[in-house]
Each structure stands twice: as C-alpha cells, then as structure tokens.
Length: 163
Image (cartoon, rainbow, N blue to C red; front, side, top):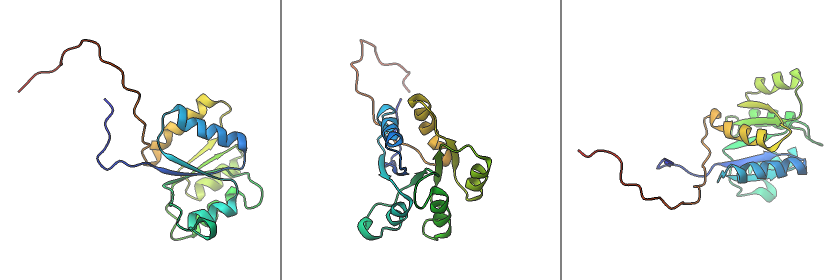
C-alpha cells in the first residue's frame, strides 16, 4: 500500500554540479525512481551560494530542503561552499550530502567535520546512483514517490474481516 502522509510535500533539492554527464545521471535518478521531488541544478559554487541566499538573479528562489554537493568544481569548489553554508546562520542547519568523485580521506574527514549528512563517492552506473538516491531518507528527509500507473484489478473480492 502506498500511503502519503497528510503533511507530505515535494522536497526541494539543489544539486551543485559542474559535470553535464553527472547532471544527466541525477535527472535520470528522479525519473527512474519515480521521485516527484524538484531538482534544481547550479553549476558553480559562487552561483550556488547566491541561490541559497536568494541574492541577485536568484532573488525569490525557493530555499532547498537538501543540497547535493560536488567537491571538485572550478572556481569556488564544494569545500569552500560547504564552509560558507556552515558559517551562515541562515543556512548552517541545511542538510548537505557530498556526492563527489573523491575518495580521499582528507575530503571525507573534512566533509564530516563540516557536518555533512552523508558522503558518497559517485557511482559509475545508473543503478548504483538510483540506490544511492533512495538512501536520502537516512538524513531525516523523505522523498515523495510519484504514484505508479494504476493497473486494473483482476476479479478479487474484498479481503479482511468486519467488526
């Protein structure tokens, strides 16, 4: 049975990612997993911070519930973005999942020191990426799944007892 909590709403997710291929993969995650949450993609760290703060061209942007952050980007990289998020009193508690190619221990350690919700090394295939996305509920946020297409029921009667 697919139940929806009465207070359920779409989750706003910001992906900070410069790789076009990885952006396509993330988009596929939400399509393949029938995840109805809204994914916004920003390709560099400076723009991501303006988006999160609602500055400039991002005035009035919806504050995300979750950030998926790549560490390795040109310009202001994900490490600096994460530091600024944690120093900003309005953003400090925002859940951040680091999703990066780096498996370097110093990056893992730094990220957890900066209170990331999770650290994931980017998988190489779509199946692994979908499974990683489905783990987002582990950060205390629930993804909203779009209902599966309705199928006709085959001649089954009601099940259960009455009171």
